[in-house]
Image 1 (cartoon, rainbow, N blue to C red):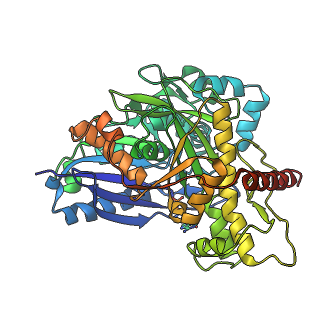
Image 2: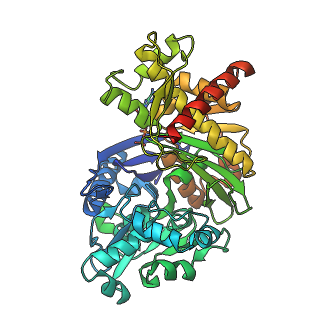
Image 3: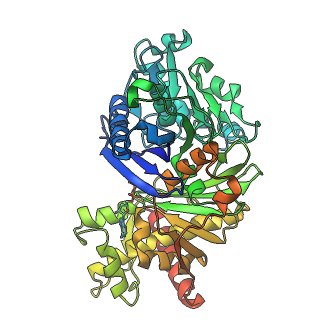
Length: 494
Ligand code: ADP
């Protein structure tokens, strides 16, 4: 009896396989790191061969633990978004390392397109901004810089895909070249739309000089992606879902209603709100994206990010040595009566929404002779909450008012921070007991295709969670927010 869904969660630093039973409880997991390479300033790469080999290995480990491939009803895939691969259709082998989403090598190309006045067209068509973060200019870079690639692409020999499409291609032995609509909506080549309104944009393909022949077919997030090559796991297993990681967390958290939102606090933080059937338009440089498409239900999403969240804690640990592990930040912050007037603006790589200032740099301010290391640690945690409030304000100004914020990711383990976010943002915070919401989202979407659940049941599913309610006095909050604004102004002036 096939009682399990096997989710492949291919993240930036590791790839994992997680098995879920029919009640969507996790029963097995295996994980393997995938190394990142930094071959030049601003370049971030990963070996496509490693992504594939390590993914196979973790899948095989979990399948063996379940008792064989017969136990697996379907596979679901969730992945780091925007990361770009171009491979040989005949062999499935990438022609160059994967260009990771963080890679800035196409910054000049984006600047030139902006200078030529193309950004408003790009936003109108794709919902995105002209930024090296997205896949479009990365594909162009590969075609122009790998010897012979453009000619081979035009001859139909090469295929492009984000990591979902690459894994699907390899898992199906080259039978399926397809991506899901959420991943497509991050490429800069997709006309933002749901329920048939979207599609590859000829205008964008022309602007970025990408031959249409390299593109995958676009399918719903819950859909039939073909079956795995029987030689890989001993049986042909259907692939029933694919979805980008942040949208997967939105779906996993059950945010299927308009106005429902989640934020994932990992290395950076990503806030995504379900905006229902209305295509989001932002006056604050937030991103319009596809939230999910199941075949029966769909929604747009509005997205904003905080560049530095968990990185602050890593920096306090690894560079300043003020904490020995991340969890210590909670103990130190909660021992203090107040922040002592200390603010930490972690603009290590500039500031995102709503400031959008790439030149801003970090600052720790308000130091006195009485400042202790705990104040600096606390200021680092507080910064996450202030930035979340700024994002929520930008969302509200764009018409996406968030009343309940669901939180997951590594930093969500910090109770003190969860309460402080609720206090500063004046919003109820809900943290699920089971925090692997990204993998859970891919499992739910595969579960829909298997008939193990339906959309209404998924949205209304009991999710054990802890709630944090805002409890801070308005005067205290106003004082803290004024202090933060002063600190941000100083960072922007650097
Ligand atoms: P990613 O998926 O981006 O690699 P994770 O979701 O695993 O990140 O989150 C890891 C981040 O969370 C790290 O930056 C770590 O410093 C931070 N973190 C983990 N536990 C805590 C904690 N108790 N308090 C604050 N930050 C934490």
